[in-house]
Image (cartoon, rainbow, N blue to C red; front, top):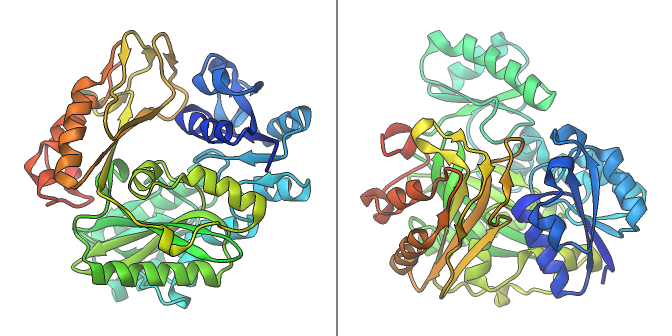
Length: 445
């Protein structure tokens, strides 16, 4: 096994990776910015090294500085977590060229599936239904208008290299089409350095379903699906597994097609294939070539440590799992706890945490990196922790989540804990009568 792994990330995912490494006796190196020197991941790692100032570009995205940290600490492998450099194929390629193991897929596969246009073509080639729209990047407004005529309204304009809802525009009438097309191209250039966009049919009432896979040279296994349909402006708030809206026949077809595509492209590592689901049909959305924020719900129902499996595949090239090993039990729900004020349009709420009491008890898990006296800074993503509750069924998982949210106390900053209490007690959530547009259309918040 690897003797030393550097974690090229921060916050709760860095803590999560360190814990998995410790259980295997692997030494860990934490990198940090100047404002993160007192962070939990720095305290838990065996070694730590500052890679720059608080701006992500100067630290967690600073490839030369991270490469220096790898060299100084003699790390054999790098776990990128999610976000930051986790889907940066240049970073993965540099590591490959320097015989440092990137705990994730090859740079080739990151590049292949990171381009949403190319990924859509690959999905179509291997039998996964895709959303009607442009076959590739749309160069100008003339070509865009031709696609609009064939597809019909409403349409969604998306950045080819994007994510997180940035550079994404919904068009419902022709008058606003040209302006939104040009705005989307401008935002794509600003956020991703690439103004290429594509256009596809927009679904009014879809669910967001994703399939977790683990792939080695020997085989690909799926760890069933997650439902991530509780979203606000394309940002996930609550995730659960299994999805309350899928039947066994749809599941079987979804899993078979997903595994087939992942096998055919020769992918290795953990990954998530995401779908839009509406009116009994699913359509390929994208593939994330990394571990997901919401991976714990899959872990608690399957009993499989996805981070450890990532490390094992990176070291051996193979997965030790058979599909028959994956036997999900019960239902799990995850609430993302963010340092935000929902009453002020989700304005970030940095500050020093006062009293901090995290819930525990039967089938209750908190993945986080906070503690009393910890300073939440305004420079990074506002998520401070995740609360995961597991039950024998969905009703019990909701009951346990209710109890756990009531126990959760974080003082000194404003969080989304009270919002989650409202959401999971809402009749529509309880009856699973919602879709990705629910919170954007209704005044629940």
